[in-house]
Length: 185
Image 1 (cartoon, one colour):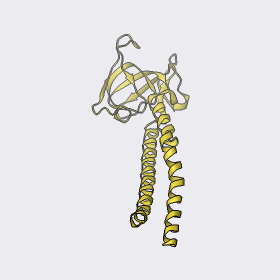
Image 2 (cartoon, one colour):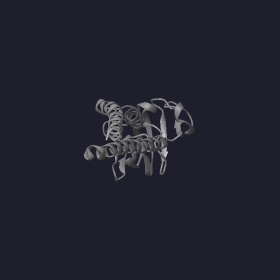
Image 3 (cartoon, one colour):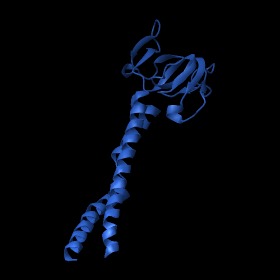
Image 4 (cartoon, helix red, strand yellow):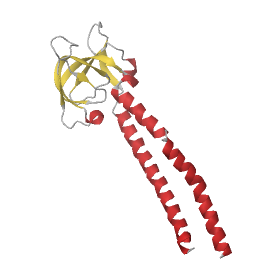
């Protein structure tokens, strides 16, 4: 009987510890999601493909497929696209985990398979490039990654749901049996 009484607090401790670890993981996931969303710039130097004049700063919400965007050293790519002018190297570590800056260049036949692609949210470490927008908003790699993280945070696997249901019934049962045992003893 002494072993049974000692198991109740241990079981409660394990359940409590599991809940704390789950909460900690959710907080870290929230922080990672906020970091991903903060990587997206709010404006872009852009012009329509047939636009006259120079590049103008505009909110990224106004970017459309085919627009041309200019990114200078130290700035973030506001959308995804294909380099059509210039060269440089981009830090894509936030999106891909790659430690070294990735070269970005233009193939003489812009848009051909040899031209570099740009990932939204990555930073141009050095150089100056103009790229044609191929994806904006939630259609970018960064947007899809953010949606996946948010979905994963808001859902539970079936095994975890089952474990939570068992714990919700088992822990009160153990407490009742412990109280009953102490009262009878």
